[in-house]
Image (tube, rainbow, N blue to C red):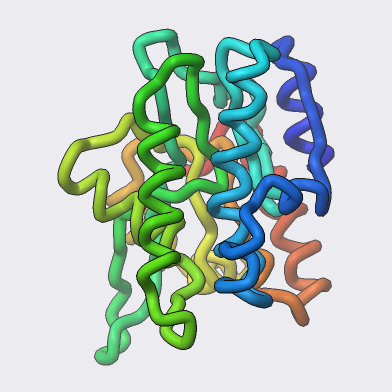
Length: 228
């Protein structure tokens, strides 16, 4: 979070932190449906929170960054020009397949996303997320159901504006960075379309890896000109 605040200060953006009060804007029925799956609740909450700020006229554009979103090359990441009414992060997710080969999946994520006042995507997403959760069987509610899975599916159809510099670090990528795995890094470099300036660290996947996460933070901060 400190890195995001510093990034905002560097570029002259206003910064606002929201804690658990974020969930106050989520309808009671939605919270009851998702239960303890707070990431699913946050997928709707962030949209409503941004919509409320825009509707109140507090900003022309609102950008969201997750608590585990690290900006390690702040000079390299800026809010898109006015031609982008909405935008999302772009992750290159690396993992091994069953044969041990490195596979890369290009997804859209909402750990970093933004909307300008009057854009048509934000109200559409709020309505879509609510409809999907209302219909889904709660026992089969996947963590990324109305987050990256939904956004990636929609992107494949309509083509959202995406920020290649705002990516994500998969567990395999984390291992590669900490252990200098040249094969994995080569796979990343051959597929990454712009130097990473910031990334979702996917902390929920590493809740018991505090020391490794600290090492990852230090490693990423070495890439002041972006990771490529």
